[in-house]
Each structure stands twice: as C-alpha cells, then as structure tokens.
Length: 389
Ligand code: ATP
Ligand code: MG
Image (cartoon, rainbow, N blue to C red; front, side):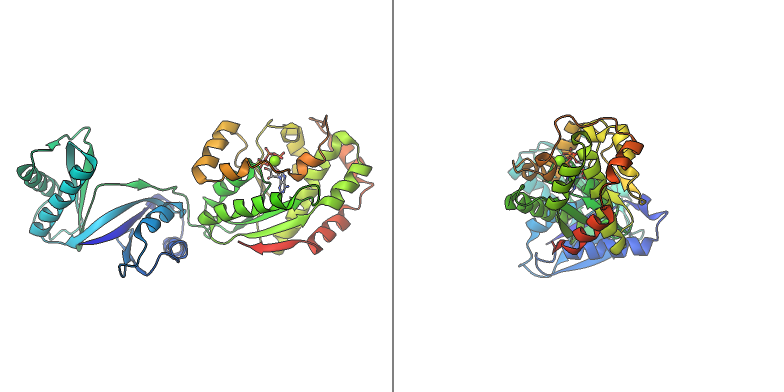
C-alpha cells in the first residue's frame, strides 16, 4: 500500500494560457515548496499531478500542510495507490473504510467512482455499487446514504487506481511566476500583506518595499516586516525585500510642508521610490493595501492625488473590502497575529492630527515645489538595504 498526494488544478485557467508553461511553473513551485520534506517523484498525468515519496523519510504530513499554499492548486487528497485489479481495489477499499470507521466513528457513506481506463471491465456506476456492496457485506457499522453521507469513498480507476476519502481545498489562483512581477508597498499593518497575497494569487511574483524610520521606529518594527515577508514567501517563493531608510525624508517633510498635507505628500514620495525600485527590477505594477475611505489618506480624492505621483499601474486589491473582510483573510493566510504586534509604523510617527481628507492636486504640487523629490528618491535608493527572504 502506497500513500501519495494527488494535486488537482483548475483547467479553466489553462484555456487562455499556454498550458505547458502553466504546468511547468506549477510543478517547479511544488518542488520548491517541498524542497525540505524529503525525496519524492512528481508525476503529471491526465491533468493531475501526483507526488510520490521515494522513501519512508519523506515528511508526508508536512507536505500535506505546505501544498495548499502553492497557488494554482485547486485541492489535494491523500490517496492510496493500488494496482488496477478489481479484487485488490475491493479489499483495499474495505481496509480504508474500516480504518475510517474505527478512527472517526463514521456511520454512513457512499462510493463515487471514475473510470479513466476504458478497458477496465466495469463502468463507473458498477464499480461504485460493487464496492459498496462488498463493504456492507463486511461490516454492520455502516449504511449507505447517497444524499448526506458522513464520508465519500472516491475510487479513480486509471493505469493505477487511487482510493481516497478526503478533498482538502487549496487557494486556486495561478502559479507564481506566470504573470510577471509587481512591487508591494509593505507596512507592518494588517492590510498590505493581504494585498500582496491577493496579487500573488494571480500568479504574480512579488517584491516588497518597506519604509523604515529608525530610530523613530524600532528595530523590532523592521523584524516584524521581515517576519511578514517570511509568511508571505510560503505562498510566493522567494521575496526580495527592500528596506528604505525614510527618517530624513520625513523630518524634511515635517519641516517644510503644512501639517495637514504631510501624509499625502509622504505617500506620493513612497510611491515614487517604489516606482524607481520596480523599474530597476522589471516589475510592472505597484501594490498597496488601501481601501476607499478607511483613513484620511484613502479617500477618493487622496487616492487620485497619490496615483498621480507615478506612471505605472497601482493595484489595490482591497479597494472595495471592509476591514473585517481583510482581517478574515489575514487570519486565514497567517499574517494577522504578526500584523497586530504593537510596533510603531513610520506613518504613525509623523502623523498629522487633522490630515486633509480632500487634497487638491494644485495645492499639493505647490507644497512639493520646495522639495527636491528627485534627489530624495535617488538618495533613498542609494541607501536601501536588500534582503532575500
Ligand atoms: P496597512 O494595514 O497595510 O498598514 P493601513 O490601513 O494602515 O494599511 P495606511 O497606513 O494609510 O493604511 O497605508 C496605506 C498603504 O500604504 C499600506 O497598505 C501600504 O501599502 C502602504 N504603506 C504604509 N506605510 C508603509 C510603510 N512603512 N512601508 C511601505 N508601505 C507602506
Ligand atoms: Mg498602516
């Protein structure tokens, strides 16, 4: 009896895309995600991927936990692989069912079969009813319930036969690397990690930029961002993190700009620095965690003025979401607990008491006229710290 992992992906994605490229990326991302779990073979067959451990050292449970995080995977199952021989399938099916009844106390079931091998001498409904009858004959603890069973025994008859009872849902999406690269403005808050995750889910490779205002923000604030990137990288392969020293810029803005325009001008400069970094790295868009009306700098007017600071597209995947919807995703993906650690962010250090909620482009430009923003961007990039996480 051999336990293997069956990986399903959604074929709907393959229609518009170059299918081998999609599958190749998915397989290489799976190999990357499982690189520390031991030795295994990856077999692609009939729009499925099978992960077969090579020896007993393979960390099976860990692999089952890691795989649903790989974008492009729709679901996985732990399956028992047996020879395609009806007697063997029948006996193994009973063994699996008996084990489930013992461990989980299930009382009802149904069998769902799929015959992928047309030369097999039973049709799919015949396989289901014959296996079901065999199980009922050997136990009095179970009954068949086709509408609402405690569990379903799935039997897929192909070159080999796969028997399993659980389908573990994954996140879907596209394999990271299929859709180019984007640059995430990553604070230590709840929103931006979720925004990065959502764009990565569409197959986009992510790099991150964090603005750090040491010593106004602590080393621990920086560690928190590194930790967030580590969590995100479980979904997105390696992430290049740029840490931009932002203190001097903020002090200068504080001196030269009206208090009620500080945040919006700061935001525009952040965008320009992130744009300069992304151009260098062939990244095609910026990503932020903004949503309409959440804070003063996220009104329609503020977003308009922020957007006007750069030429590249800005993705704001949370734009229409409520905070509690964002929190739900943050919890699901594992960033929430880290995001709520109480360290200062650069935006909270130099924040104005009464920021303008409806900034005007003309006014903002006039306040910026006293600043040498090109020089600010240039210096910021010169002094940036780069970590590969
Ligand atoms: P978040 O939870 O992502 O911090 P927020 O609701 O606190 O968002 P703001 O602080 O106004 O909102 O920030 C809006 C967006 O600006 C963030 O989602 C992020 O993309 C970007 N941003 C804010 N601060 C930083 C920072 N220190 N470094 C990089 N990007 C930042
Ligand atoms: Mg924030």
